Length: 389
Image (cartoon, rainbow, N blue to C red):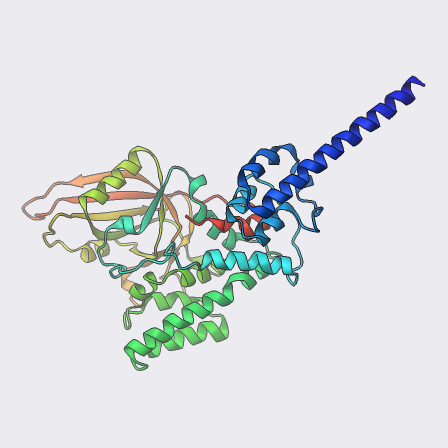
């Protein structure tokens, strides 16, 4: 009899707890619906992720509700909370279309996050902090992790990623090619047209990267100033370039303002991560980078060599363009193309004083490659990019 009463009390207590939990759960979903981030923060710790992921509020999960109502801050918070590792949903469903629509909007939002404007030639000279961003650690390099998730997605996931962004990338890149053709004329763009047609019709990815090396028209400048679509297409197909992953040293010459030079020194002292923001041509030959750096006297600027150190790890986002088959238009330059979102640490700054033979002081800054984290799974990929800072 005692055991029976005890069981009844236990069941009543469990029922009461379930009712309380259901009320809290309803409050959580309501907060996701109206965009109340503070309430989400307060309530989320009460639930295991398996329960949150269940479709139990108007046939949607909490994440679905936040996405459907456009609350990007809540989407980001839920994903950072390390939930939502659920199964792939039907790509034909309205839910999935919302997910991918959200992704495309964030990736191509015209706010200048990825697009570098008014840059010099890829082997020209510009303030390098236009081309890099600084992070406290690899964990904070979110856009780098995002692009590596694209590159490393499983065969199951890759078609859905491609569905989400490939068409948009090709449309944008086609506009760039057409604009270039209109500006420079068909005769000048004959090789460009041939390579781009080969990429579109035959999925020739070597043709895609060879486009960047064309000198007439100067596609490196054009693509660096409109880089997001071109870069994303390379990341989507990075596995096609595995044989080009570079290991070794490459170099780039540039001129740098004293202020930006101090940024590098500070990054080294604090052991911060440096993330490239734009496509960057480098050479396996230090002599080549010296040639392009120029030894002319420069007003209020430092002459520099950036030494990219890939000795410890082969880098999938540093593409050796002279690897067989060679796709560089000028093979003697031994070009290595380093993609945006590649991560480095500044490990050494070497100062060479001016001499009679070399009247300009020189600096050599070593960027040591840091592999990006692989990141999380599909759900993280689909929606985590509510913030690509």
